[in-house]
Each structure stands twice: as C-alpha cells, then as structure tokens.
Length: 489
Image: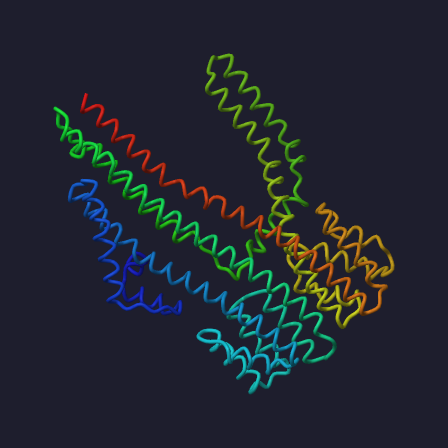
C-alpha cells in the first residue's frame, strides 16, 4: 500500500525527478495530468461510452501519468549519462595524446563539460590535488568510474595510470582505444535512433487504430439516417464493454512500450550472471546423460500413452505424448539457444580483450601483456584465459596453447586471430604493433556484426509490436459489426 501511495504522491514524484537530475514544476505536472485525463475522457465520449465507465477509464489514465513522467525523466537521464561518457572518453583521449598527463586531461574534460559530469570531474580533480594516498590516481579516477560504471572508462583509466606512473609509448594504444570508443558510441546512437523510431511508429499506430475504431459508430449513424430501421449498438452492454476494454488496452499498451522500450546504455547487453549460466549450460551440463537417466520415466510415460489409447481416451493420450516430447527436447533446445548466445558474447568479449592486449603490448612482451589482461577480461573468457596463461607459462615456445585457446567455442574467426598471436611474439616492436592493431580492427568489424545481431534480436519484437494496435481495432470492429448485423437484421 505504501508503494502505491509513494507512486501517486506528487511530492515523492518531484523528489524522484530531482534525483534523476530532472526539473518539473508541480503546476506543469498538474496541467499535464488534466490534459491527459480530459483527452482520454473525450475519446470515451467519441466512442459513446457511458459516463461512469468513462470516468473509471479516465481515473486509470490519470494513475498512469506518474509512471510515464518518471520514465520520461529516467530516459532523459540515461541519455544524458551516455552523452557524458561520450564527451569524457573522447576528450580525455585527445588530451592525453597531446600531453600524457592525467591532471591536464581531466582539466580539459572539465572545461568542456557541464552538469553531472562537471561536478564529478571537480571531485576527481580535488582528490588528485589534495589526496595523500599512494594510489592517488586510482582513487581520483575511481570517483568517475563509480559515477558512470562503464568498462571503457575503466580501460582508459588503467592505461592512463600506467603511462603516468611508468612512462612508455602510448600514442598507438590510445589510437586503438579511440577507434573502439568511436565504434561503440556510433552503434549506441544508431540504436537509440531506432528505438525512438519504433516508439513513434507505435504511437502513430495507436492513434490510427483509435480513429478507425470509430467507423462503426459513424456507420450506425449513417444507417439510422438513410435506413428504415434505427440501430443503436452503442447502448448495448456488449458495445460498452468492448469499447471500454479497447480504450484501456490502447492505454496499457502505450504505457508498456514507453516504460519497457528503453535501456541503460552504459550497461552490457547481458549480465555476467547470465553469461556464466549459459557458459555452464553449454560446456558443463550433460543434456544427453540427463536424457539417458530419464529413460525409465520416458518408458512409464509411453506406457501411459498406450493405456489411454486402449481405453479410448485419445485427448489424454495426446496430452501425455506432447508433455513427453517436450521433456525430451527441452534440454537440447535450451542448450542450442545458449550456444548462440555464448558465441555472440564471445565476439564482443574477445574484441574487448584483444583491445586491452593491444594496449598492453605497447610496453610489455606478449606473455606479460596477456597476464595483465586477466583481471579485467570479460567473464566469458575468464576460465579459458586462465588455462591459456598456465599453458604458455609452462612452455612459452609451444604452439599448442594458441591452437587450443577458445577452440571449444568453435568460432573460426576468433581461432585464426588467436593463432596469429603466436607469430606476434617473434616480431620486432614496430611490426608487432602494426600486426596487433590490424588484428584488433578486423575484430572490431566482427564485434560490430555481433552487436548488430543483438540489437536486431532485441528490436525485432519491438517492431512486431507496431502491429498490435491493429489487432485491438480488428477485435473491436468485429464485435461492433456482429452487433450491427444482429440488430439490423
């Protein structure tokens, strides 16, 4: 009950908006609520819905407004956070390439920033200036990492701190990072534009559906005007119920798409827990063994099907048979879907790992560079990378670890990239950097394909939902026409 009160409370709503760095006056919220309520009530009147149901529908619409307002400012806040990260990553990179000093790069980013990012950078600069910790760079930059929680910010910070404390070459690595930032930012902006387009099309579809749903009312008016018999379907209980449900469905669907068709743009597409669950399902579960152990169960179910058939209970027999087939097939189908997800995760994770490896190779030999990537490597690669490091430590000149690393995933593009790492160790520094950078750029293209596939999967349902309002209007018009036919004949 308390949650409902907080949800409807205007004071709590203002506090929530302020917490999301938004700004809205109480007067504007009240005016917005009144306009929405009047609009919905007007639509009910256009459908000839009686006063009491119309008031109930209007009350439901008014109760949806706080959620829509919160979601509106939440989306603005998430977009602003992503924009801050875009500005920060690029400005820090450009400044550090020009002058490899963390404090100067922070000052440059501070000068062009505003709002939340500017305040965060001020705290980091104060920590850098007045901090007494031995790891003052880590402590200062962690304030930014905690505020924005972005893996690319952490990767940039690790490299900048390494150059600040130990020196070494940095321009080639920064160029690799910059290209990764550009691709990531461009992909997200493209995805945001697609989501906005889908939401717009859904809103237009709802409006068109609501207009089309009025045709039966106009048709009844025309029949009454030109026909010999008056038809008043709007006075029937069936019409009132169907029209009320239609308006409510349109409202609920609009609210659902506005609230759920949005994302935290800084988070990864899937959590580490989800990735590990699929990884264990693919490589550590034994669907075949489970099926073999369940053979006695399958036999009992098969005998049950036979008994039902003998007794003439065909529906029960078919039901048991369907359940049996589903129980047998489900472990294999789940594993097959998990394999697809794991490979997409590997494409994205391997590119991230290869980027960090290329950055480390600017100042470290191959083995040391690989070891330095372990702590921050994607979770999908954690276990294979640990085994790979152990194998090459035991025998650095052996080629077998390079051929077996990530081979269990069966991704040819990644296996060929890993095998190239073996030859990189024998190259001079300049050739090594050129080769690894070319390899990273090629894998950027592969990860782009994986990201685009993930985006296509997530937007395919959204695109399909553009047609859902047509089902609503088809349902309403079908019932209305049945009422017209039954009453006119």
